[in-house]
Every structure is written in C-alpha cells, then in structure tokens.
Image: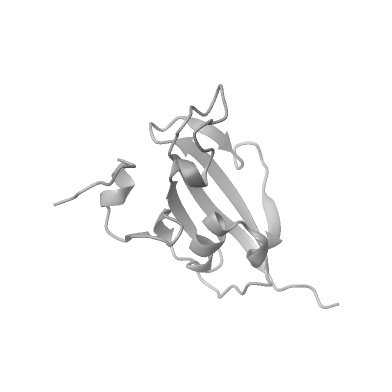
Length: 130
C-alpha cells in the first residue's frame, strides 16, 4: 500500500522512486545509454510544473536548452542527473524549501509550492581538451 509523505504527489507512490539526501524525490523515466562524467558538457531540457500539472516553464516547447558541466548543475538537479546516462530522463519532486520556499514566485508559483521537474538529457559531450 502506498503512503505519501507531506508532499502528497502521486510520483511518490510509483515503483523506482527514491528519496535523495536533499529531500528531493527522483524517478528515472529512461536510463539512457552512454556514461557521463562530472566534467562532461551536459545539455538538458527542463519542464517545470506545479503538482496539479500547471506548466510554469517548458524549455523544449520554447526551443531552449541549458548546457554546462554536469558538476556545475545545482545539487537538486546534479544528483538525479548522475543516475542517468546520455539521453536519459528523470522526474523530480522538489519540496518548497528546495524550490521557491515560503514566498513562492507570484503570480505563477504560490507560496510553499512543491515543484515537479521533468528533466531530459538532450546530449552530453566530453569536456573539450585545453
């Protein structure tokens, strides 16, 4: 039987969902193929949502992506990304204190909002030689 914690999001009851040190819940949606190291340049697209499914930001829909070294991503994203390989995807449930906190980001993000992130690695490349 499923028991949800205070975040109350359905992902928390699904097989394969783990709680990371930061209190973030992570579920690998697709593991990907091809190892990634901390110095690799990793390009991701992120879809940011409220727990009711309201989309706050969808990088892919805006034809945007973020590229930086894997180790440069904030811990909330870095640790789940390290569970993936190239082209992998993960869903994260992030408690308010690790997202926008008690103030939120009005008008789109209410105070104390639990956030859901769908993160997909578009590609990764070894760090260029210097």
